[in-house]
Image 1 (cartoon, rainbow, N blue to C red):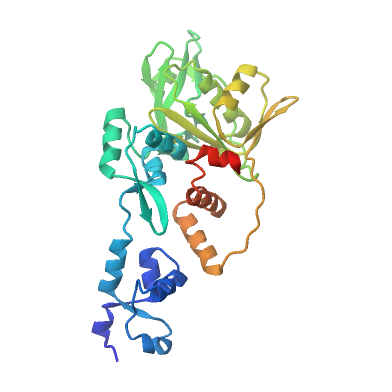
Image 2: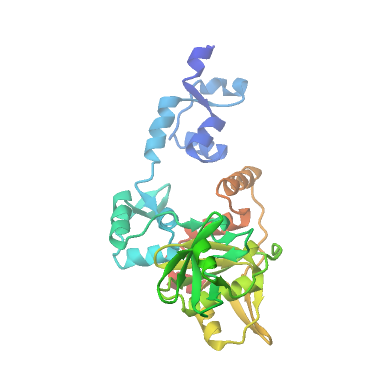
Length: 335
């Protein structure tokens, strides 16, 4: 019989599964494959769980340690889409090495290599933009929104937001705090309504190059999206080079062909449908019904909650990663 003091050196099947971030069924698989040997195996039915020595679990944990960062992790860290990371690897801009990990060959990038890339490209990591950083709710103002000076008619844009304030930059390159700019006569060109949350499934994703001029058509395109859908239905991921924008399906009421071409050129995920009064951007999602074990469903639910994603979004990302759909464009074309 195991005393309480000795019990602290043991982990149950469920505890090992949680520690290794796998399901209990995977732990049983490791036992069958002799990768993990339980203690008192003949008594496990009495305990209703197998028990494992902590040091044995730690050994297995070390074997399963990732030899670097995955392309997805680097994409999140740098605020760049995974397809761009894969292109950088292909062009040897980022050095990566394919290694066998948990039965699959995956590209891994050393943390030092990521830091080198950041230094050389002057990029600050983790620039995912929370809604509070692109929308001042009490003032109804949005990031990149157009301002016009009521005295001089000079244009400006709200280029940064922090809490309830921000900074505007004029077409002549002058920079003011929002408060100073307002006192000098700058005001929003038009009021943008905060519309209700759009319950349509999925998002349409665009990736625009970050413009140097506030007169860029990219900012005009972004403002069209604001007018059509409001801040509730937008997500941002911004770095020094790109503005990645995810938008709920919506009709953009514009017949400007130049702006339509801009949207089509920088469409990353989804589709654009020409309508009589503009164009409709759609998520291009189709229903796929699958039945999974309850343990897997619960794992997806918990992980989705932890990563602040929907179960659907997390599952799609898992499919993309498992089959390297974001890495091999030729393979995607053959599907």
